[in-house]
Amino acid sequence: MAAVAGLFLFYRYSDRLARLVERIFAITPFPRWMERLAVRLIETFAGGLHIFKSPRPLAFAGVISLLVWLVVAAMFLVALLSFRTPFPPQLVSPAGLLFMTALVNLGLLVPALPGNVGTYEALVVAAMAVFRVDKDLAVAFALIFHVGQLVVTLVVGVIAFWAQNMSLSDIRPVEQRAEVEAERSIEDLERGPGDVMRNA
Image (cartoon, helix red, strand yellow):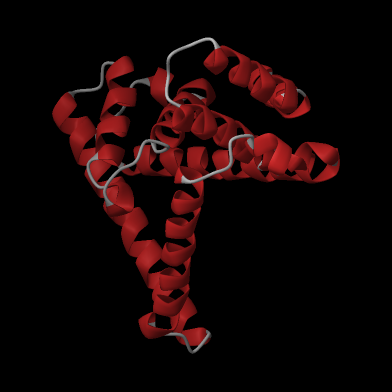
């Protein structure tokens, strides 16, 4: 709730925040490009928060996110119960499952290798360490659970490609266009106008 309130305030007062940043940079010796970068970041981030204009999509997204997290917690429960070695009851409780779900899901926001290989396992082991699960058992669970997820995702993905008559060659042009647009955005950012907010 605090995070949502903070995002709403950021969106509501992003213009004032950008002007405040400009004033701060005006009295500091930092180069001009740093000011443009800071203001552009504020503008871009605030632009991504336009969902606050209409609360209905935000509420819908919140409900969907909650359902997804509950499904992930249920997956953890089923996987934990499938092991012959019993886990601590605190871990299998609703609070323990939601704690592990939150730690893993939020930890995956950190950039990682494709498929979150290594990062996912480390997060699961860290969550289980809170409940004093043996490290070898935690590593075994993390590997089996993650491999199961990856295999299911790949199988479903291949079936979806086949059903839509798509191939990797169909996706490459889209990826190339995205790369070109990203490079253009970076170039625009580097040679941006002095007053980004005024020219927006």
